[in-house]
Length: 534
Image 1 (cartoon, rainbow, N blue to C red):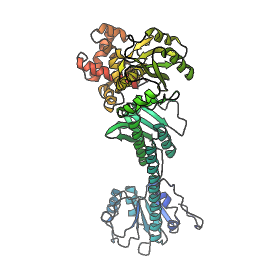
Image 2: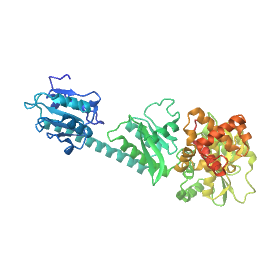
Image 3: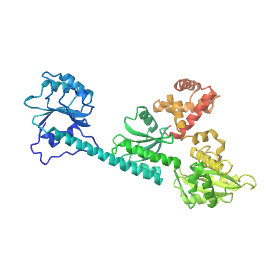
Image 4: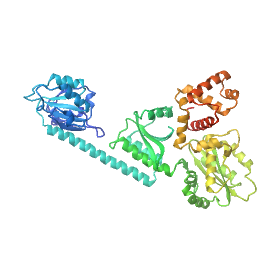
């Protein structure tokens, strides 16, 4: 090892967010003055030092806790020491390195010690000149205390920042961006079904970053997330999902602390606003966000504000609606066109949802004593307007704001699912099972359902997984007519029956059992609604 002759201008430069390593120790002036001779591999020099301890006794296990740098002059050693036992006991404690100062009593390093340290991968540093151990220990301890002080300070700043975010009601997307900037990394919000709900990044992500995400993330969770950092988002006993960042992310306060505080702030926001994708289309229309969020305790307050905004609730029939916007749409003109058609039939309030597809949605209100249901003829004309694509979806007629809220959510859900796109006007209430799956898709138990019930299929590689999901879908669509199911799966009857037998083995289920078919139908609906790769 090359030794510098001039130490006056040499100083230690240690990364602020890292632990002190043996390699960094060897650059300290208090160590270099001893003319150190190093017996260690490059990888062994990367071991971290948790403390420094002077030990003249040969019994290491009685005085050490582990991860220390041990300094000795060998003054307390026996005449014929057992170096193998000595090195083994230190290796068992994961000692960072052994520093031996030569003296008149021990003028040369024993070859037995060199061999034993080499056998147990214990870095050995031999000082050929006298050194002040107190200066080495002081430098190490000051460095460690400084790092701990910085970590505590940084941790306090992180805690204060995200606590303030919770008090101010900062939305999830802003919290994610704050977290990404702090970690100089990508941060992802994932639900308990391994679906990405949102993310923030300081870098431009590769185009294939989210490819096969659910299956890759599922494997990472099952292996203990050793390839990344993942912290659960849990509030009031409810698990929303996980906050995830890459392994290479860094922060002086520690990655786990930053993610934990951010996860707490996000959990608070999700409890307040489980659906935060809505933005308003004019004065008063932001009220639909409060209504769609599903906070029952706020219905009375929302009731008053809706009526003040011109939407009658008392003595009125409410009906939700939703329609998807076409590509290149003009939002304002689309909203005006929709209002022009709806207002002669009923009072209406219109809002906009951006994701997963841009759509207008809202509530219709007409008096209970009006003659019969709404005239559907004008509603069917909306389908042909250039601002829209697909059908107009209507929720069931409802009385009271709670039922009106459900009607609106059903219309939005049916629109998101694209149910019965051949028709111009679709009544969402005709598809109860699909709507039930959509309504419960954010519940952790429902998100886990396809992962548990379809586990045998999901473990397959992509092409086989797609094929067996298609066979299962055909079987569930026509459970009593296997010939028709074979036709739906685009397979011959003989091949279909072979696939069916394999499918039952993969699922460990009897596809003739009614209860099993119901559970699988619900599982497949939830899976199809949250996975785009199938």
